[in-house]
Image (cartoon, each protein chain N blue to C red):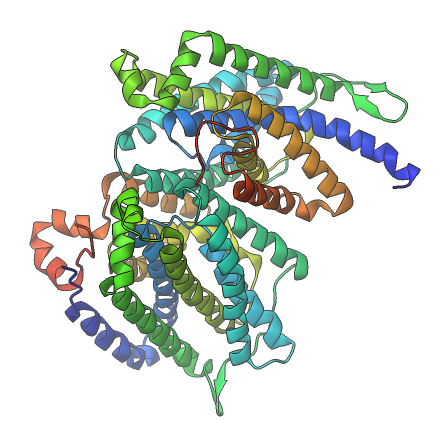
Length: 321
Length: 294
């Protein structure tokens, strides 16, 4: 039976909620944690498709960009940022529904290809409608409170809330009928179909779930950084997500999330020493993880016998094994 | 269409015929890697640019334009090395598909960055081998482009011969159809896999060398050919030699017409939408028979 231990996340959330108190002493900490949360939301939703559903989407950054650009362009033209956020999610969904209904009929590798192509099309499109960088986005506001105040504490909690919402939805999915159908399809597609499971329907629902969260994260990220450029759909950005998923472990429930936090701090150090070689080092980490740590961090933890109790505490492989 | 549009259009179509020949080399390499080795090579574009950079460097080093051809065997060796170092380790693993995709995608980014570091971010162009041009009245063709066309056609002919008449070529296609049965009749599957990766990289290298003498290129130059190559593979149908070649010219023509009527920023999007359309109507590709895509 599926068993997602809640102790780990509760502990982590407790720590994460206290962290901003340290803000006065270490200002960079809040920024790094905010970025880590953003990475964690996108990568865990990506991983839901990669590892859990067996849907090899390479187009997630396309939806991130749709969210970010919708928010950016609508809010600088004077529309309320909150409405722009909703608009971004709607546009993403409107794009994702036909894409998934068509492309999810394809075999996995062709789907990967089609979605990577989709991402390139999105990139071409955003460059065409707004070449260059969109600057001076307004901050999100509630009442008189700007989320950008006090070094962006508002955004930190906003990302945290979105992360927890995403985690809760994933948890529900794993335990639901939909989750069981997904696993059945992943483990033996032919048998599942012969028992009446409709693969396109089931996978479309999961795809749309991940699209909604990815797009919303894109919108928030645009407001958080005040600017949007086409670099958010670049191959370089893609590599950061690949690292988080490969190192964290594809198909492990908390792996990519934990890896997001590790990576943000590691990257902060890496940027101090490396400029051009940084991408190469990242690539080597991705490839080495994929070759030697098939289940990512989980495997690493398992190999380090002394850390076994931490493994029991925080990570637990989800389903199918 | 007015008459003054026809002249550039003729030139464009001749150009797309030359380009189509190069695309078929790219697509054939991709298709071979995919159907025989089971490797969806997202690094094909980066390999192509590597070929272009090596060819450029050899010409620059020796001052002899034909030194560019030395890049071709070097790419074959690169393919063998990649196969031994990376792809071999994931062979026969049931869940290797996604990890191979992630690895080749990463490899593409890493190779691009390494090329940037080694050769600098400057845009290059391989010096031409033949000067002069032929005047056809409505259009002129550069001798260099004719040579490019000849090299591409020769490579295609050699590949066609190898794949249909030689033992290693037949072995490649046999393994593509059924690895287990190939093993059962005594083929050295491991060796054929390695050679196939080498040949695939070599084809990308030839294409890179040819494209690099037609256009200025930088490290990211290979991305568009990668997408175009995959669109061709899907349109032509996986594993069919003739289908791949027909689809190459079709896509090159679509790309040329798109550039002419809609502008360069649509040159990937329109062939891509055509691919999606074909996948809906004919899931085996336009000319494909072997494998269902859905």
